[in-house]
Image (cartoon, rainbow, N blue to C red; front, side):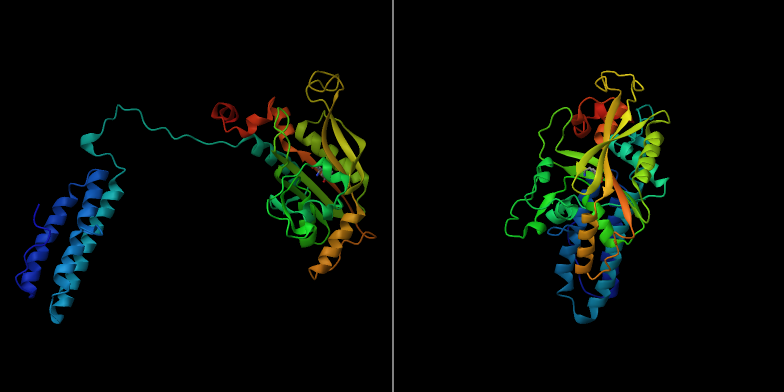
Length: 370
Ligand code: DAH
C-alpha cells in the first residue's frame, strides 16, 4: 500500500493533477476488489474513516497549508475523489445481491421465503366485522388506555357502584392525584368507544368496534387478562328491540350458518335497558345436547340491549361541555348496542381448548391456521 499522504512538491495545477491521478488510480484498483462485506468496510475505513481516513488526513495536511489561490484547485479535486469513492461503494452495494460467478454453487438449496398468515383472532374479528359491514355498519376504534369517565361513568357505572365489581380492572399507577373521571385504566370492554363515537358524530349511527380489552382475571383455560371484543351500536329514529333481535339473528346466521337459531334472555348491563343475553343453538350438535353445550343445546354468546337514556344523557352533557349540540334527544331517537367476546368465538370455531394458546406465540400452534 502506498503512503497515506503522497508527497506534494508544490501547489500548482500540474503537480495537483499528478498526485490526484495517483490517488484516483488507487481507488479504482481497490474498487475492483470489493467482493465481500469485510473488504467494503475496510475500504470505507481506509478512505472515509473519521480518525484514520486518508481523505481526512489529506485535507488536514494540504488544505490548511495551501496558499489561498490553490484552495479552490484543491477543493475541486477533493470533491471529485470523494465522489469516486462514494460511487465505488454505491455500485458495489448495488451488485452485492448478485451471485459472483466464482463463488456460486447452484446445487445449494435456495433460501426459502417464509410467508406470514393472519392470527386466528384477527381473522375471526375481521369476519365478524365484515358481517356487519355488509349490513351498512362502519368500523370505529378507540384507545386501549382509557379514562374512568369513558370506561365507566358515562356508561352509567357511577363511582363505587357494585356494577363496577363485575369488571375487575387493571388501573394505571400514580393516578390518585387526579379527579376520578380522569384517572387512566386499561379498558375493560369496548363499550367506551360507544361514548367516544357519539361525542364525535350525530345520529344516525351504525358502528362496529373491534378491539383488545384487559381485565385483572387470573389466567386459566377460559380466561386471559387480555382478550378481544366486538362492540356494536345502532342509533336512529324508531329503533326498537325488534330491530336488535332481527339484526343479531341475521348476523349469527351469516356467521355460523343459516341453520343456527338465537334466543334472548333478560340480563343486566348498566348502559342498556332492557338488557339481554343472547344464546345460539349449539353449533356442534345442532341443539340436541352434547358435551360442548353442557347438554343444554344452547351456547351463550353475547350481551346486548337498548341504549339506556342515561347514556344519551351523559353524551349530551359532555357534548355541551365540548361546545357541541346535545343531539341525542331521547324523545326523537333510540338505539341498541351489543358486545361479544371474540376469543370464545374463535375457540369454538377452531376447536381450541385453551385460550392461552392464542397469546403464546407458539409457531407450532399458529402454523395450523396458515
Ligand atoms: N361491555 C359488556 C361486557 O364487556 C358487553 C356488552 C353488553 C356490550 C351489552 C354491549 C351491550 O354493548 O349492549 O361485559
